[in-house]
Length: 417
Image (cartoon, rainbow, N blue to C red):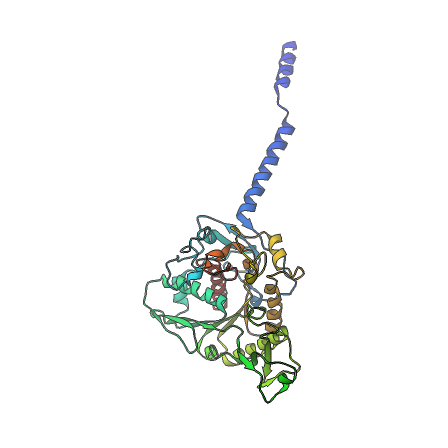
């Protein structure tokens, strides 16, 4: 008995205290887990103040496995083994300023290693062959500014990888277009900055309503007349994707003093003159109505939400830049885009407020790319864009707009089940 007790005391003396050791192990494990999570997953910023429209038009749609999913609510997850694009920098349709790999942008390859993961489901990368098969005998048009061209080029480069003859072919007014002959599918891009017809206006020597108010020149915007580049598009295309917004809050293009926007309705100037935000609402109302009247009942109409810019340190003409190498954190994105902060890039949410208000109750589907895009400050051409200033507005190709097309095509599949 004495021997047993002595042995037990010696055993106890050699024991290492377990509680401090286990505490240390737990602390290190949690620290490492959080570090990995921070590096490989970036969640979106808090929801914006505006209300989303219910149903698919808000970005909510049927998920691949059934049920409902809000594809706009998710996070970016880095996976070096998963490329988000099905093409590379050799696609000849890529505008030189967007070809970040050819321009030796340091993170050009890493941009495509980030995958958008909705919280409630998966957003699969679309298969070009399956898409061409499903949408045979279909005409698809992109109508809008150069950001819609960014999206159009991404789609073309993905489809071009499929074997088969492709010919350049442009419907009336289109800036560029292609026909995939084997599938009788066409895609085209119609360039329009503000959707409505506009051009330079000069004061009449005989006077007039605007002249009497002291206006000598400006841009006449006919709020009720579509620009000629796309006026026939609703009669030709089976699917249309619209966007506008970048030119509306651009004082470098429409200077409120030297070159103001002067709005006309039914051929007459609107008196008293209205500011651009009111003119924007009027244009949206007329253009949406025009498209709904012209397109047949079975046609599919999308309006893409605003694509964010990521200028830091000022706007493009003030020396602003975008040199980040990874997606933003939610708080960083909120600082850049919050309407309360009213910084350089705040117009993205301001434009969306107008869009959602105008589209409510219409037959348009909303392609909500804004939440996922606000985080991708790393995905612009920046100084590799070949301009005198950083390009923090357009996107590298391959790049983010490939995910826009994944979202676009997933919605198409859900609509045409």
